[in-house]
Amino acid sequence: MPKFAANLSMLFTELPFPNALPPLPGRDLKLLSFCFYEYAAGEIRQRLQENQLQLVLFNTPPGDVNAGEWGSPPSREKRARRDIELALEYACQLGCPQVHIMAGVVPPGADRAACEAVLIDNLRYAAECFARHDKRILIEALNPQTKPGYLYHSQYQTLAMVKRVDRPNLAVQLDLFHAQKVDGNLSHLITEYAGQYRHIQIASLPDRHEPDEGEINYPWLYALLDKTGYDGWIGCEYIPGQTRRAGVVLALPEKINAVFKKITLCTPVNTRGKPMSTSALLLIALASVVLLLLLVIKGAGALERGNPELLPRRRHPVARR
Image 1 (spheres, rainbow, N blue to C red):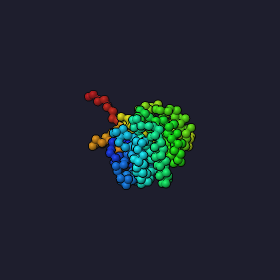
Image 2 (image 1 turned 60 degrees about the vertical axis):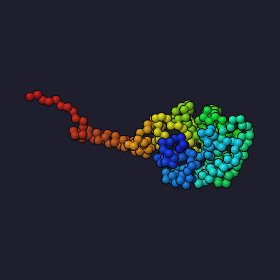
Image 3 (image 1 turned 45 degrees about the horizontal axis):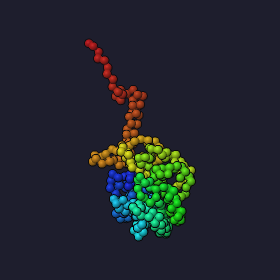
Image 4 (image 1 turned 90 degrees about the vertical axis):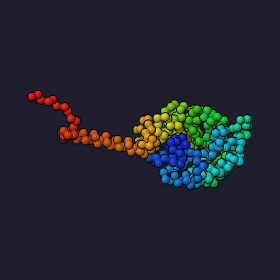
């Protein structure tokens, strides 16, 4: 069974970072990615250590998102290289093995071929810098509905780009949500290009919610990934549904998760009106089960002993005088 990681920037949004770093039950679920460049690496490292979490992937700086950027514009070579160097500094301090190099949105009227040439040079520069620290870089295709104008939308574009850059520590970040929207035939992508993708992300289609709904049969794909020998992380990059508590199901150990994965979990709040933590929800559930078992045992003992004080009282007819 693959190992899962949580995308903090999409799943755990009820608290501001860095308080959103969750102490998750079951250490099979680690941490994935979030935007954090406004915080010192030392502060992030401390919070990761306190919560026994591992950072397995993050992105280069996204740029001015409000202006439509998603990474350094492909034509801005110097800025892209500054972002690459900053990401490498954080990766080294946080012990993160890989970084997604965001390709950026092609500016209106720009020459796409020229943007690709600049990106190739930047990726080779990034690969060489990261290789000195035994780290990997990734590139990802984003569907045009989610991110219009992004440099590449198809998985086959990123696969071709990896060949053109030709560096051993560059690989594809395969997001199955984006892949299904653009390319389809996920089983072909997984089997035919095994070894060329080193990180996978999941979400349901069409709503990009929990991966236990929608048109993609993820359990079947998990088994297929096992057959291919994939040993990387699977990033849970989805938007929690309205009635879900982000990550509760995925945070459970796998054997428990197999039982509860079909349950819709609501979002109880504490006395201060804040969403209850995962650990608090689990304790409440455990206490309820224990209480129920005690009542069953107590009732069975009463029946066996015939103790009237422990049995339900019955109304007796009153004798007439």
